[in-house]
Image (cartoon, rainbow, N blue to C red; front, side, top):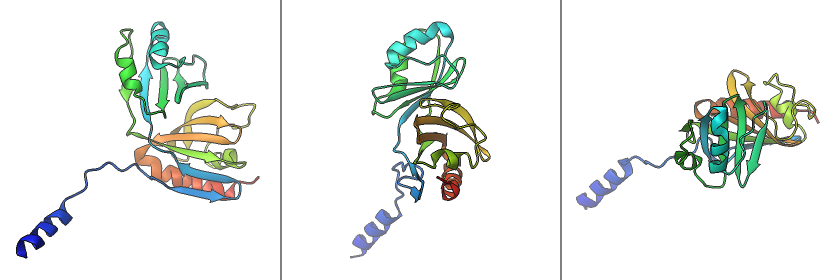
Length: 194
């Protein structure tokens, strides 16, 4: 009996080593908008000169955009232009963009940032107003059309913003700021007017 009690105590004290996604399952809804944490995805921060773009695009299966504030998507993979030689590549199809870049001999730097970032979806008629509660960027469809993306701020935090549809955005932020960003967007959703 003493052995069984000791075994039970040891089992109960053993810490869990499984990785839990930040904010997993959190969602909030207001009359004009829904804010929800998206499932984990594979991501890389990619830097490369112009001469390497074609080889990397071929390896990744998506053409790396070359114009400011643009993105390209194909087969569950999205490449977001962040600077003249910088992209954020997001794969939601379960593939590994870092492994795809490993075979490219052209000059580049690819760093896996899958566990650094958290993605939050903001959808509905009040999505732009919700984000504009803390983001100074003009989110009108004329200035920020579907497929537009940029590195910007939300409140006190840097984010990467992608417009997926007329009334849908993907907000990428660092895991350490994800609770702040989610809470900020939740508060903004309550004030969003249709």
